Length: 306
Image 1 (cartoon, rainbow, N blue to C red):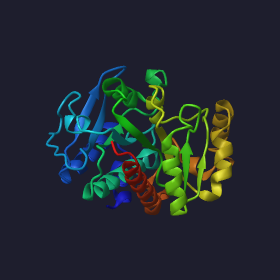
Image 2 (image 1 turned 120 degrees about the vertical axis):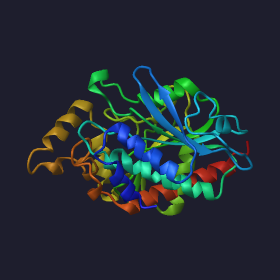
Image 3 (image 1 turned 90 degrees about the vertical axis):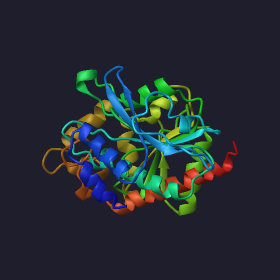
């Protein structure tokens, strides 16, 4: 799959058009999917598809409403979720944030389809992760609606992805009291170490969140986010993302002045701006994240016999 080409299809489009790019790709590959529509606190649409687990058959049709993603949720064994969001921040083309993660998940799904695992595998591409000024700057509306409507009791693990298109290392976040004892962290770190990929784990980030949080706040500890990052910027990134929110925002705004971009790490120079374009991304970064996720899921599946 040409993931950069897919990112270009999504970039610069309105959120409903971005969603349609995903749906058209799924239709073109003959992949059944469902649209999880929600109306609280505001209307939105998540895209859901998956594999029912080895030896199971799934004949769901597009648009089937309600919890009967039954071909998946009704299967023996707990689900493994791989998730990302498709919406973009105001006036941003949304290439790295977060079309890159969507493209990576689509290729991951193709890889997994060739050799299914025992556990049901579900891909959820959320709407409304980004904050919205018209809604009190509240984000994660799509993932919270998903958790509200379907719960967490049938889930084994949640791998969340943000910004997968720039870098040769991986950031794991946030590692806090809510998830620091999770087997998922050992799973991810073990794969990264085996692959020889540099990785950093960080704790609570005052100014950043992602859809993993909807699961953590529901009391489900086995959820974490991964981001591709340039290894050479790891130290400056750690310092930047752990700044108090006011200081971080001030520095980010100052970095947009002529000649001041060096005030913030490269990963964030295009973040939530008109510069978040595909020309700055790399296929190899998305390949790395896809390879890591594939190994993580296969090894987790083997480790849990249920």
